Length: 215
Image (cartoon, rainbow, N blue to C red; front, side):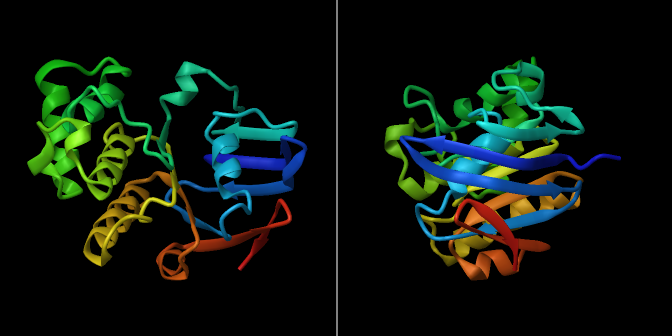
């Protein structure tokens, strides 16, 4: 079986700056990979390329052995993304934001509502299910974004600093949920600057100078 996610000699530049310079990795099913590095080191760029949000300038990214194409709907549905800034829809409630991910996969009605509530419950934010985004704290929005990424049970989950605004208890809930997804078979990549979060993952790499190095 091929790796769930694979980057092969990936180069990525923006604004004249080299952000990825021959980055290579492979993430297997059931694995949790922590990508360590300070702000500006290229962690977010790596996840954007791995998630099919940005095309590499050179090199290849594969999802399940197939070349990853930016904008490919079928491939996008196999990925769960937790982005900085959360990417939630401000005019929707917390539950509706989670349901959107299911509706994109043609899961609707009571089935979608039940799954969304269960996902929010697992992140301990079920009490805000019917609140609009503007009524939620930053930490609550962050957990809603994680619930949205997990609810479809994707093949791979890419989480960019998913615990940045959370207290210790909420951090534990989020990381526990991501580790549980890996136990269920997902490949999970977590970009973080926190070594304690990285230590809970099955493998770590550090990004430096646009390249990835084992820790």
